[in-house]
Amino acid sequence: MKKTFKKIASQLHLWLGVSSGLVVFVVALTGSIMVFEEELEPVIYRKFHVVEAPKGQSRLPMDNLRATVANAYPKQRIARIEIERHPDRTVIFGLVKGKKEKDVFSVAVNPYTAQITDTRRENDSFFHIVLQLHRYLCMEDTGKAITGVATIMFIVIMITGLVLWWPNRKQTKQRFTIKWNAKFKRLNWDLHAVFGFYVLPFTFLIALTGLVWSYKWVNGMIFLTFDGKLQQKREAPANIGSVNALSIGTLAKIVTETHRLLPHPGRIQLTLPESDSLSITVSKVNENASVSNVVDFLYFDQTDGKLISKRLYDDETTGMKVRRLVFPIHTGSIWGWPSKVLALLVALITATLPVTGVVIWVGRKFKKKEKKLRKNAVPLAASSRANVTVS
Image (tube, rainbow, N blue to C red; front, side, top):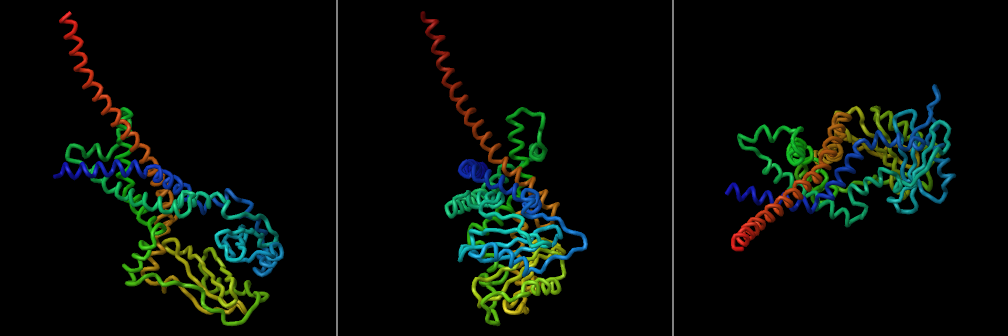
């Protein structure tokens, strides 16, 4: 019975690995690139993100920066504004045409001079392309379906891999250590099995959380489990006043009030609705929190910048707090640099597993062919000796 179970696990591990190996390799490799996206983005696009912060000079009111962008691009609507907490960072305006929220044109503005320092289409940026490859294999919904199925396969592969790895008394040392001075075949097996075992708990969590973006029902299960009901759709509350355009000084007032109500350090994002009937949504990351992705929301009236309502992280449901943890667990950003370094190593090792696995598979195929050739060679040799004796 035990042998039959291991044989089934072996076949599942092999053929699911062969089927999903290339996708797992691409997803793991692109995932490793994205671990330090936040740190690398201003390095790769320095002109877009970084400015010289003059000593003793305060930033210009946000309304002045908005006016500069609106005058430069009158045919596009400002949909969002991103304000970093660092004094040497630009303020980034996200512009869209109509309702095409996916095609964002970003404009970076110097907050001290109101000059436009750089622009770009977000769809053309390096990390956006890497993300498209990571989630969709650059094939939109088809790619999303493929990565989703491959992730489920990979979860089964990890479970069957643990079954195959599980040692008996004689194999314990071999299963936990890599024999670096061994021949290639043994070394490759160790790299696959031993490294695979050590990264398995982390890779399993990463794969499991990744399913949230592939399947809506997985996301729904989080809320059903912790809240007893599905996630409630949330949108900005109705605007109280009647307004055709943002009043002068409104954005400056909103930013000041946000800092007062949420004094902790963190990135601020203002979402400006297309409709005048909805309020402005402001989100602020809490960088003092013990884990990342802790965000508070405030809603302000477009007419005069008065606070309409709050949605603070502390008041969120358990389901929403758990859902907030999915992203930092998946990316390794949950505890900052230490967990990011760990996530990078795990992602890189995971990317090697399909490679070492294929090498093991190919090696076994050649071994079977060699055995077959040897079996065929034995009767031929005997036949030739018989012929020599007769002659």
